[in-house]
Image (tube, rainbow, N blue to C red; front, side, top):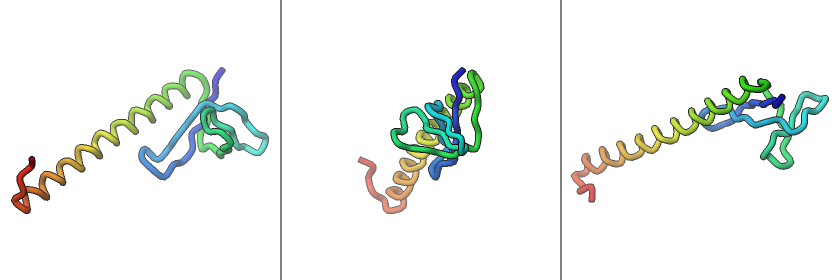
Length: 88
């Protein structure tokens, strides 16, 4: 059964995760896709629970990026309006 590790990250959604490649005796793991990286996870989930959590973290990251792009466009438009600059 696959294990999924999740650890804190400094950008939204503030957590990142991956399948566990190697679990070490000191509580750290080597995640799949993170060559040479060892992390101390805050949560390890097995099987479908881990897979579902990974999908949700990815969904949240995508949602954040979409909303951030929309926010940038909104304030660019509002700034141009404040300066009476044509949007073209």
